[in-house]
Each structure stands twice: as C-alpha cells, then as structure tokens.
Image (cartoon, rainbow, N blue to C red; front, side):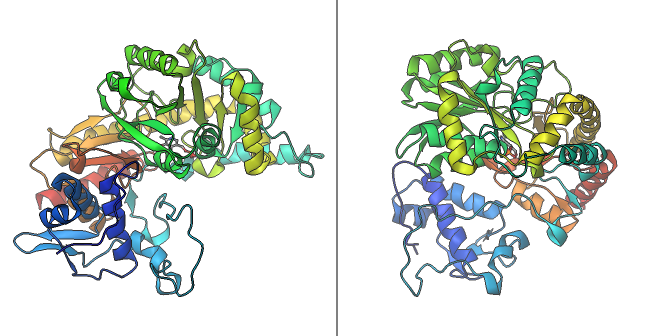
Length: 490
Ligand SMILES: Cc1ncc(COP(=O)(O)O)c(C=O)c1O
C-alpha cells in the first residue's frame, strides 16, 4: 500500500512536514474517511524512498493530534473521533477547497490555513492550559477605559488624519525609555517602529531581508509562526539544535545565512536561557557571517526566580541585532501591539515596509498604551501580574510531580507563562494523555499543538507538553491536574 505524496526533496517544508500535511489535509477534506487504513511506516517509507524515521515522525504528529491511531497487530487507521477543533472549519457549508476544483483557478502563492490560536466557545476545555492565553480577569480594564477615554477627548485630528507610519513618536519614546531601563537596549525613537505584534514585526523583517531561496537559521525546536513567516517569503530554513546553554553555535560554521531567528531570554518552547558565552559566540558569528540576528524577546518582562538578563541587543557592539518586542504576554494578545528596534541603517527601509503594509498602527491603541506606560500604570501592572503568575507557576510546579510522578521533568519555569514538561517513560505518550485529559475537561497540548515546530526526531518529542498556565488560578490548576492524576491512576 502506498500514498501518492508529491515530495519536494530539497529546502523546506521538511519531508515529514509534507507527509504530515498531505495526510492531514486528505483527512480533513474527507478524502480519507474514518477507518481508512494507512500504509505501515515501512511500506510508506519504501514507496516514497525516504527514511522510516521520517514517516514515523509524521505519523506520530498525526497521532498526537488525534487524526490517526495505531492498533496493535492491525495497522494504522484514520481515527473514529477527529478532534472537534480540527473539524470546525470543515462543516458541511464551509468545506475546504477540493483538490480538483470544477473551474480552473490561479494557483495560490500561499495555500495554507491559518493556525488555530486557541479553542473558543464550547470547544474550550473547562481547564485550558493553552499557551498564549492570558487571564481576562487580569486585564487592567478600569485604567485602560479611563486612559482610552482621555485619549479620545484629546484626539483632535488624530483620527481623521494619518499618523506617523513608524508609530506614535511619543509611544516610541516611551518604549525606548522603558527598554533602556529594563532590557539594557538603548535606541532612539527613530529606530523603533510600532507593529501589529511580533507577527507583523517578523513580516517586516522578511520583507526587508528574505527572498526566494534565502537561508534563515532557526533554533530546533522553534516558534512555528516565525518559521512559517520565513517560509512564506521563500526562505529555506536551517535548524540548529539546542543544548542547555542555548543554540549550539558550533553548528553555525556551515550556515550561509544572512538571518538568524532566536528567543534567547526564554527559548520557545523549551524555556531555556541562552548563556552569556553563547550570546557572545552568536554575535561573533553574525559579524563574521555578515548576518542579522532577530531577537524575539516576547515574554522577558515576566521573571520569577532570577535577575533579569540583559537582552542580546544590549550586548551587540556591531549593531547586528534586530530586536522584536510584544505586549501580547504582558497585557494581552488582543491588543495586537508590538515593536521593532532596528539598527540605524534599517530604520528608513523598515518604516517604508510598515507603510506598505498599513501606513502605521491604529491611533487609539497607541495613545492608550502610551499613557499607560507614561503614568507608571504599566510598571505597577507588571509588578502585579508577576506576583500573580508566580503563584500560578508554583501551583504547576507542585501539581506536575503529584500528577505525572517525580521523574517528570520541567524546563523554563524561571520566567514566562509556560513550562515544558517531559513525561516519564512509564506513562503513555503525551498525545494519548492529552486525549484522555480532554475527556475530563482539561486541555493539555503537545509542543506542536502549542505552536512549536521541531525539525528533528528528538527522543522526547512525543512525551512533552507545553503547559500555559497564565489563565488559570492556583486552585484551578490543582483541580485540573487532580483530575488527570485520577485518570492515570484509575
Ligand atoms: C516566541 C513568540 N514570539 C512572539 C509571540 C507574540 O506574538 P504577537 O506579538 O504577534 O502576539 C509569541 C506568542 O505566543 C511567542 O510565543
């Protein structure tokens, strides 16, 4: 038995990604019905002339996401129960485009679906450890309403005329002052551009520096959204492995990239912090290779058990770091506010790209955030949420050994809003635990489902969860893991 998967053998996406997507898309479109038997990993690997490991990895992703299941002695089958979240865009009246449309249409340059950011409405589990979700009860709504209404009262022409394409000068200055004290990054407002989150900042960087065939180095594993953005501009990705000090800079010698993307302060998804030595080695490589380094500093304001570490951009003598900041983790993703700090020579081209994209960010959100930072409300908000999230993090640290046993390991717990948990060998794989947990109202997510992309078959990859705890109280966290614990022991 075989599957007609047209594989592109060089560049990205990887072979396992292509196999995964082909099968997933055929299941979602109804082409492979429930109970359809798939070829064994050996058969498929032989027929596609790829390694068995590649197929196994693709099957493991499909299994962990609930698309397929392997029955001992019988084979691999399309699942009886496809996860609701996956089915939602494929209801009867909103079927995805068929592989062979009735009428010819121009081929799309980007034919993929938007990733599900998190489950909504009744699909959301009662206790949801989805990464990236904050607690709506903690949004500073009273002060935000007051500041927004104050800004509106003084809007004058701000809403009827275009503002500066780089963003509000006052907000850029406020961000610059905040960054200098908290992250050691010194930049004049002319080098700061306000963006629609880190997401748009990465798109601007790509528009400036990535073209078809450009090599971009990423950490392995990395933030899937960033990898997809680079690929959407035609980049070919070079994944570099990590160890406990961060990206293994020794492996960079071969890289011919002009761009490297990293999350040094709290690696996504592992949560590791890049050592000072590695930071220096990375900057030395960038200088030697004549490359830019993109530092995604998405959650560095939230630290618990260690002093803040200066940003990579603060160490950068040769001005090769492009710093990406976001307010999604500290205030909320719905704001869609972030920023770029670029080296001086990129400032004008970056503003030109921002102008191409949108002519600048909406005025009201910028004015409100500006007042929020200037009135010191931001600092007190940060103090408050750090204490709150620390208690939630502590609840996770307590619940994990009780639920998964003392051999479960955690990384990344010193800061941020998630930890990476690796299950011990005596428990089922993470995908199976997540499926069972969903049945008792607990949402647990494998790294892939939490927005990470892995390029290699790491031995632990199928035993891991990214646990996002920001939206749940310590009591809810204890209750949720109590339910999972009962399941595992029951
Ligand atoms: C690694 C990483 N970068 C950036 C972001 C924030 O993205 P945005 O500012 O577009 O919401 C996230 C949020 O999930 C993230 O995990």
